[in-house]
Amino acid sequence: MYKIHIIVNNLYMTLGLIILGVVSILTFFGLMDRFFIKLGLKSWIALILVVGLVVGAVVPPIRFGQVLSINIGGFIAPVIVAIILLSIARNRSESFRAFIAMFAVASVAVATRMLLNPLNSSLILASALIIGFVGGSAAFLAGHTRVATVSSAIGGIILGDLIIGLIKHFIGGEAISLGMQGVFDSLIIASVFGLLLCEAINAIKRVNFQKKGAKTNNLIMAEAAQDMSNNVIEPILYNENEIKVDNDTNENNILDANKANSNIDITCPKVENNFFDEYISE
Picture 1 (tube, one colour):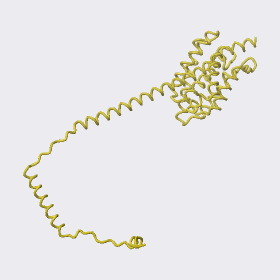
Picture 2: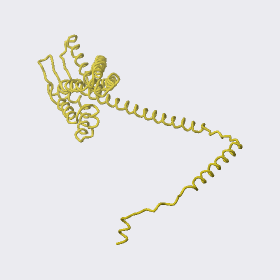
Picture 3: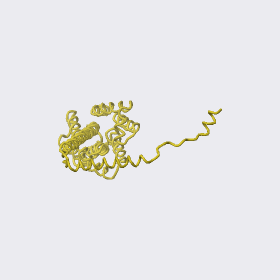
């Protein structure tokens, strides 16, 4: 019975494992380096975290009697990842937004799990998808940044799972099971979907910024062209008598200058060059 429970629990993690497998392969071949740099993680650290989540997902849960069972891939490893991501937040404002987003995602997880009460495979898959997509959207809308989005998506789902476990234990008398019933799939889907939303919104903002910049440049060029077309050179009116007087004055000045120059001896003085004279005489 215990082995069957482990196999079923791992089947619930199939979707998350597929996504993490693709991410780990891309990271291994260096195709995710640029993305992880934007996230604030080095590629080898990101690869260790992804592999840790994969390994934790296939490891049997830790049991403490009949009261508590903790899944490594669905609870312990995500908690470590969330703490690491929160530690690389750039400032207090980003950390504060991450905590606010974490509670928003936790509320989504608690509400979904309470309404659906996932007890069979179809309900577990449905709750994982709803929490993943809705929780990822809430994480991005409240977190804004990549680090805040991922950390709040993971931490919020873990917090929601803990709240659900405590509610069922103290109200219904059930055993606390942390990181099970589709939690792993939901936190992976929420993280990936939140990051995709973040990248899409940033791409749209960049395109709009470039379009506004191009419109501004075109408007400036159009205004400059219009100003040039409006600057018509006005014709200058001359008085013919004044032009005649000026011409007579200029002619007289030229004649006086020629007379003055005629009295100057303009013959070039003889240049004595002893060096060349001596060279020629040799």
